[in-house]
Length: 114
Image (cartoon, rainbow, N blue to C red; front, side, top):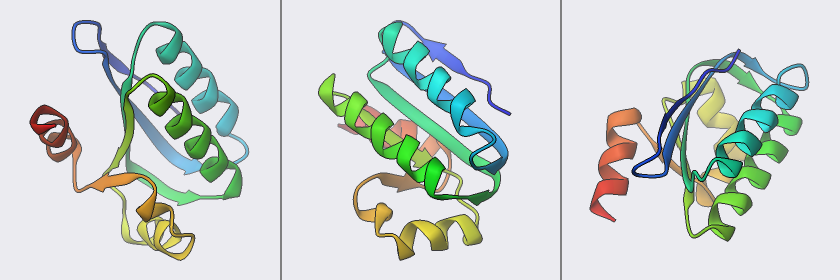
């Protein structure tokens, strides 16, 4: 399940994902990414605090999202990773490609300081 918050003044969107972020959910998340980017978002914070599992299809969506944000001089940030999800990012070294923060506030603060 996904939902979003979008601030048109700062081109920042927060996209929370819940449950298992896998092949069953990637199309919804990709659609949300595309909609946000079309609407002008350049910075997207993906909140994974309610996600228990990610698979390779989810990682692929994140890579596409990261590239799309960077093409717009923006950034994709992740926050709220639980230990099992964080371990997947570390094993795949995705934690080196995408900035990860403890929570949404930390991610927002990082963007404000940039």
